[in-house]
Image 1 (tube, chains in turn cyan, yellow):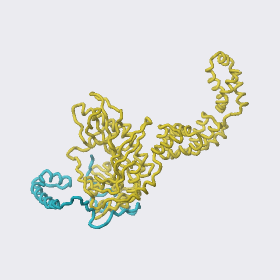
Image 2 (cartoon, chains in turn brown, red):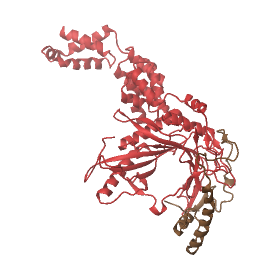
Image 3 (tube, each protein chain N blue to C red):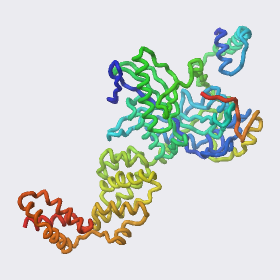
Image 4 (cartoon, chains in turn blue, yellow):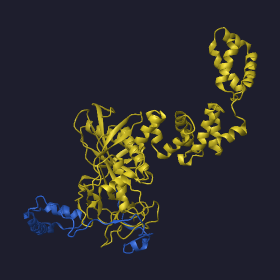
Amino acid sequence: MALDKETVAKVAHLARIKVPEDRLDSLAGELDGIVNWVEQLGEVDVEGVAPMTSAVETSLRWREDKVDDGGYPEKVTANAPDAQMNFYTTPKVVE
Amino acid sequence: MSDYRLKGETGEWEVVIGLEVHAQVSSKAKLFSGAATAFGADPNAQVSLVDAAMPGMLPVINGECVRQAVRTGLALNAAINKQSVFARKNYFYADLPQGYQISQYDQPVVGEGEVEVDLPDGTTKVVGIERLHLEQDAGKSMHDQHPKKSFIDLNRSGVALMEIVSKPDMGSPEEAAAYVSTLRSILRYIGSCDGNMAEGSMRADVNVSVRKPGEALGTRAELKNINSVRFVRQAVEIEALRQIAVIEGGGTVDQETRLFDPSKGETRSMRNKEEAHDYRYFPDPDLLPLEFDDAFVEECRGTLPELPAEKKKRFMESYGLGAYDAAVLVADWEIANYFEEVAKHGDPKQAANWVTVELFGRLNKADKTILESPVSAASLGELLGLMADDTISGKIAKDVFDEMFETGKGAKEIVEAKGLKQITDSGEIEAIVDKVVADNPDQVEKYRGGKTGLIGWFVGQVMKASQGKANPKMVNDLLQKKLDG
């Protein structure tokens, strides 16, 4: 698989990471290396093997329908840069 | 297919509609956290550290949400998948703290099903269900609180939603609206969603495309977050007409998300193409597959009440109601219960008529729901009983009902207090009849001369003289005897 500059720019945009134009080529090379390394896994024959969902024999834990959390808006917004009246605030985003 | 057609400059067009309905699961706690779901709480007061996506927090599924999704699937006659998988749907937005929504992608908890939809003309149509999956709601952004900032409230973040996807089986605004109504009715019957569209517990994304009859499907546009049945109907028609105008003007319809603006009566594009979403779904590594057994499914099935379609059938068979009346009565289970209580006291058809015409008319005028009705079902039943045993006439009954509605008093109480009892004593009626005959010799002569239609006029005079209390049938019989004799 060969990653091109455009794909790297798109992935960076989707992740909201700002990448200067002159870094795109070298990043493409680096990411390509990583992807190719992981793709070695493709050599293993997994025909007929169900995808493994956990390393141990276990199943999804269910919780009861009980309200036992929340009620601490100050704590939730404690690290927010400019919380107002317990709201988070962001630069204005209107579609 | 529906025979609904829209006229364009180049001829007739068909409309094809599919819906994705988001229904909030009725649960106390959120889908993956123990924070509350109640409507209208203070900002961020119902947010756990899981919902705020603090590092290291892990989701744990609320079993009740699974149960409600399965019950809903069963009510939609759908396949239940005993193993399903939660996936991350990645996108970037201020009110989505995780940076992804936990949803289900290629392995939803509920698969294909179908629902029988009641149309306004009394007929029904079967609409296919593509799937139902569980997912998290996002938070809420407010853009009008500050000149330069958006305010974010995460109370809804993580609340459980069922996304119910239909097949593109609807062909008119009426069918789309009727489908949403039917779905809402089913969800409210089984209690998996309160169906409150005004509070956002239920909202619809409507996919609309147009084509010339018999041709291949056209490109669809998606109208987002429509929050009333009436708006579904309007939005479909407006969008279909827009697409026809675009195509007939030589353009092409873009596959895009659009916003319906009811105040302007238009739809407009929400996002440009460069921003086209690329959700990069993948199985959520924080969650093992969702699994349950047949016993769990059967347990869910055992808790289902009689559903609207079944109730409608029963109302038609055991009460002899027509399809239209039955459909109107079963749409809300509160109304259906009310009707059945009334019907215990009298003729079911008459009960249906009184509920759908007299009661609904007065409720509408007073802007009240059936639950706020000042006249209880038992009370209306009492009134019907008074008509059935000839204590009062139908005409008087309407006046009595007015007063019951206004004062909340019982039917018997009003009839007695006002002396409205029907006169069934033949001697008393005969006296009035004799007087009317004696007072109107001209009319009597005309009648005897062949204008027998005047009988109605005589009945009217007698009824008037008795203040509406005389039994009309007895009046009629007596008059005929006197005039012909």
